[in-house]
Image (cartoon, rainbow, N blue to C red; front, side, top):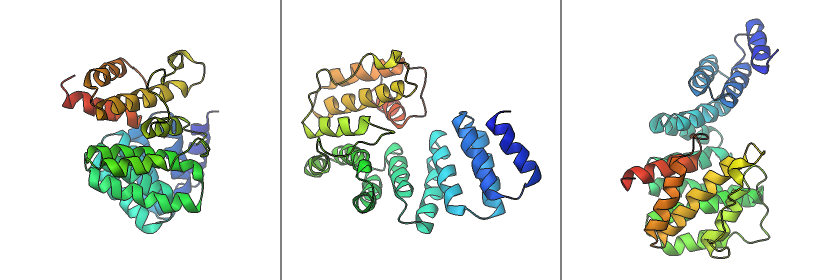
Length: 248
């Protein structure tokens, strides 16, 4: 019996339990069935209970579906209910960046910093990378440098997303762009290796673009254009937007 079937059997017995709808949505998400996941989260929200958790989960799925206004509505409400939850601000920032509202993206990621400092340092690298990205797009070079400077080689690495520390050190200038990408990643047995490859390739492209090396940046974006998986990754979505803006 699959995990989804097990959850559906529980729901047959307890159809009014919001947490089971949350559980079902998370499993549907794992299966890349994002529209159905949104429906599951919406059913849970209709029933009441676990509201902040369901709003965060549904907001994240709206991001995957490129539905920025719906994502922001859910994530803003989740942040109002649980303002100390890192994810509520982090995903707001990502959504604002993806929609091109870099000022609001910066404000959201700035809200993440005190939460990180009071909690798990490993989340500093992702926030620093996003802040460097949005500050650079806003022309705030000094702020971008200050954001990247917060990450050192001693900073704890985020186990689920080790690329971010590597990227932060690239943006900081402590890692060279030459040889930055591990070209063996797309063929790795690690199921997350291709995600790391996409993330690192995009941010190297962004690094080159920010430093005026447009052709090197475009070549890397064209490489991502050939990727056939992980199209829900933030880096892939950002790459597609940059390609569209540059006519690639």
